[in-house]
Image 1 (cartoon, one colour):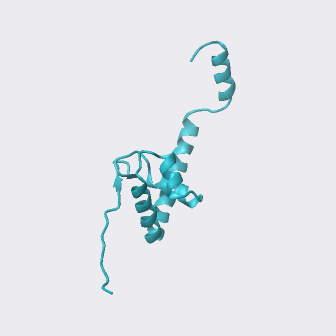
Image 2 (cartoon, rainbow, N blue to C red):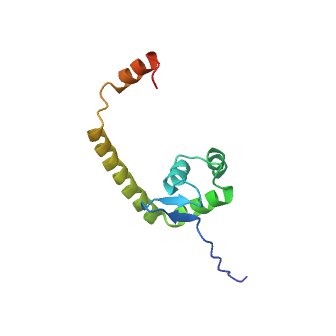
Amino acid sequence: MVATTFTEIVPLKMNKDGVLLVSKTRVTLDTIVGAFKDGAAAEEIAHQYPSVSLADIYSIISYYLHNKKQVDAYLKRREKISQEIRKQNEAKFDQTGIRERLLARQKNGKK
């Protein structure tokens, strides 16, 4: 038996904000890996995100499994950035009483 080397291009592209997107979609690596880690099968993920092909989902899962340490480090950095942005937004926009304000606006017919 002869060993064959097969090279496949992983369908990931980094946007200007440093976020890895799958193929030519707005679906992030975080989303696909998160769904996989939550126990979703590739077919379920494809059903939930129809803009991503099943082949690309399998490719992303394979990439994750072969590069777990690097991908987990990337996901950890993304989570930290997400938490920092959430804190900044919460400091900027007061959430106190938002439900009541929205319900009052709806009751008065305003959008």
